[in-house]
Image (cartoon, rainbow, N blue to C red):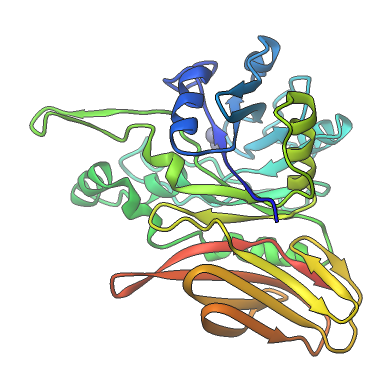
Length: 348
Ligand SMILES: [Zn+2]
Ligand SMILES: [Zn+2]
């Protein structure tokens, strides 16, 4: 089965990032990324300047991030700039839909840090909205900043940004996503790095930290398309976006352990259905999970932990309809590291 790995939600010098798209692409290629999606604030300048395309073996796609003070929204697979509307986010969602784009609610819950503009956050408040396609359940930068609760944690987080990965996504965000999925909405989980290429120079340590490399090994999107990429921008752009739009994907925290090779499918004598599928409930139906390394696997049904299992191969008998998704954790010393958050399989 084909699998490609991408880093989504990146900022370049076209907005408030410090690296050009070519520089970001080089870092992505060095870290084995198959695709990158740049989402600069309030602009599609990279797209207009024809900077989409292959850089070495890495496909760079360009979307944008809409809104400023709240309701940040990623518009992917669009060609025209979507205007901000901080107060009426439904209009932003509709504008992305008018272009047949993919819209993702970015970092909906932020707790803020008193060391960053006195606790300034960019949350999503209006949950009366409809018609969006994704929710960013895990945003690397947002979560990193939220963890800066004091001088010492701040210093440790600058030296080791990966510390912010240890607690995984906010449970509140997963609950929101579960609610939409349980109601039958095709809304999918996204993970974003939100990398801006910020560098901190610590004079006493004489070392540059927080460089771009780390973010490309942290929170990635893994997609399972039905056809291979062809090295052609138009074809491969469609392939990546279509696969994302159909939820044939998972969010992987690949920093400590690459989640490449994870699989989740429903199986019965009547067929096999992958992540993102909808199928009718019938007899002899089982959910199969494979993890590239031994893991603690939780099967979530309708937003609630249904059962769990440990190992590399897992099989769960299905005795009722529901929305099923997987959360997997791997060992990190004596702790369990949140690792894989799959999109669901709907059994109706
Ligand atoms: Zn944002
Ligand atoms: Zn952003």
